[in-house]
Image (cartoon, rainbow over all chains, first blue to last red; front, side, top):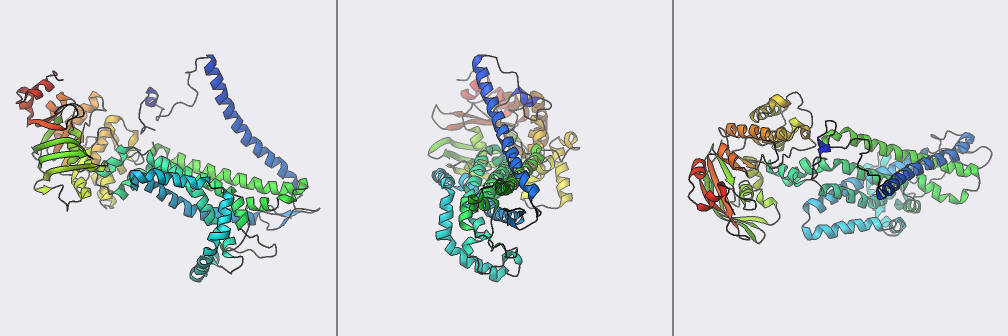
Length: 337
Length: 258
């Protein structure tokens, strides 16, 4: 980034764009310390790549036999019978529940987290911003089981009227119909809200870091043009922080997609006989909560494989989301330095 | 269009610390005034009070008056945002908005003012870039990022951005200190042209530059170490550089300082 302090000749290279070339430089000296540290760093890099690859290989390896045995369409079926000669299982329910709870969580947590980060970095007086930041970070330290319990025992009670009210106002949309079963705290909507609280500190912490790095010269540039504070934030702070906000959202989304305990505690599973509906005020199971709920069933390779196949879809889903975020960031790279 | 600046008995504070004391000076419309003096003597601080950018710094406040034609910039009814729209500023390091194209950078101020008409924006962008002697270099790549230009071009882009909103006064805080001599020359030529339309105040460490571009020069210095800065002398540039009234001024410009 040309906006950070200090300057190197490498920044002036014709292809540079302020970035060092892709090959490694030749600053290594071949001395013992250099070789040890270089080896350790390279080793760690390889280890991480190997781990991700192995996890992927493991998932595919374990899932394929069960998938081949599956008599139902894995991607479109709502059935989940993993035992016996002719297992029939599909993930469409799980996919829907996982995505909808995560979307609800993102819709709440990203704007709120960005707003909190803006408050901490741009609006709060000096004596308040540090403690406020620490408090938000503390939210991240709360174990997810505690969120689940709190949601179930405390906050959930207050969600009943919200669900009823939404049903009265927007109930004509299939999306917002609330029938009263399961109880409001066991619905996808409420699980999404609890997830939002859980990922809020992640979004806030990362956004805060990037907002705090906005160079004063950019902010003063906007103010000197006669921008109000909000206009300054819109012209200088938010565009500069955009890649950071996207990264923050993706990390949060990763957590929301995979969160298990709180969601397992809260969500009420649908009966297999129940017909599918689109309402966010219905029950359901996410990939993670289905796997956790049924962990006792992993007694044969066939059954386990079915759950691992579900886990594989979650893995791929997270992968796609992250790749998409990268693309978004890369596309605007020339403008983000 | 260009307005006259009257500064009277101006004291400038950072919190409880008095940084500059008792500045009074007048800047005539369509002239260039240079602020010179050693580092830390408060010239940039004084400059930043002329468009109320000083109070952007936590604890920044002033006593005294700064008037634009007869309007007190620090009157309680005066909106600092409105002041900054009339008094433009160019900073020490070129600071185009990195996420914006060249065109959007120049149009940024107008967009803040609510101008949406694309034709009008394009006209102003062209006029401002021409006014900043940058048009010929960038007219084929207006949609490219402003941060991709060279340092000197970026600084002229910032000047274009500042003049796009048609300010009465243009403040420049060491606009050439991060630039090479050729880019510096380009900016100096530009300042000479700008003074036909605007009142220009420039802070510089380069005394040749002050001598080359300004009509009037103000010399600032610290009273003593740890004391507030003050205005030692302000006069026609020619007089300051040939026959200054104060001994301190002569010592400074002749390099016998300190």
